[in-house]
Length: 391
Ligand SMILES: *Cc1c(COP(=O)(O)O)cnc(C)c1O
Image (tube, rainbow, N blue to C red):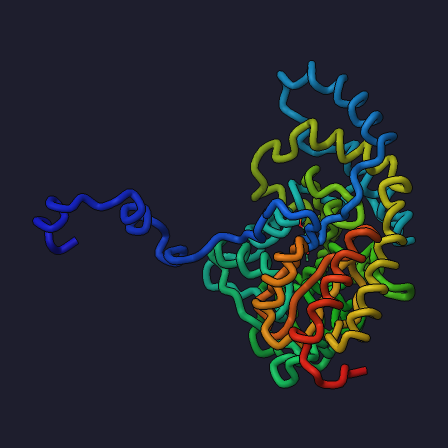
């Protein structure tokens, strides 16, 4: 402040004060947040539309009853039982042999991602990702004081193509010598799994980097999609993150996890807050994992709805991107903001990812999916570009 009289005459508002005191690099930023609107059909955050099955509800409640009287104690800092349950689940799901020492968990995979950045990023270090991808990767990186570099997919030259080739990823990795590389496969918001060779190419081209493969949607991938878990044994710098928020229908439970070399996991203990996983969280997640078959019972239905969306949108001339996840990105819209609003007026909430002419829709249950497709059918004549769909 240079003008003291002005300050005295008009005291600074609380908002002004906060802006003045805030870390300079955070000033003017807007927080992450998809709208949580009360709309009949909510298809904007890739949640699983199906509630937790009653058999799991009963089992969780029974297990919690024992836990509550012990809440006077801190939880098991090492979440031993939960790690075993996660290990057993992943071994079965992926066919890869793992040990509990390779597992690490947090309150959502966003938290385990933040542990990786806290441990391996930092001042003057660079994290590289390939846009468009998960918007939390740059947000976590920058709020933790690491420099973010926006790498490019082919969309930079062709607005309807979002692929990333091994050559292009490796070239960009060499150029920036990052401390962390974020890959996302299947990629959010585009939906498609990466060519598997991208992972190896990046590990080779960025010898000083922790390479994170965010596999939040792995359980929805089309047959034959290989998981980065299969590379862990040979690569001590590789981290694979997963979550219970999507296929597992457990977003409210807040449990995400990663798999890496035990030594890398050990480094994360330097940065996590003490007792970061509450005992109810550990219990709820462990019991849900013990019922993995029931919890994942809706995955095939959802994949079918996803394929229905891709097929129907293509018929309508909107250009859907191939999807290995529980959502579909589609293009060919004249004005995505107008279509977003028109869908909302029809009671259907989808996601505007800030990609010109595109929107993203989550595959819901059959009823929700039908509501979305019927709304799109009504809107298509005025909202979808008349160009022929690309193959
Ligand atoms: C939804 C999502 C997550 C999950 O975050 P949680 O914190 O586990 O709920 C992580 N990565 C990607 C790419 C996602 O889309």
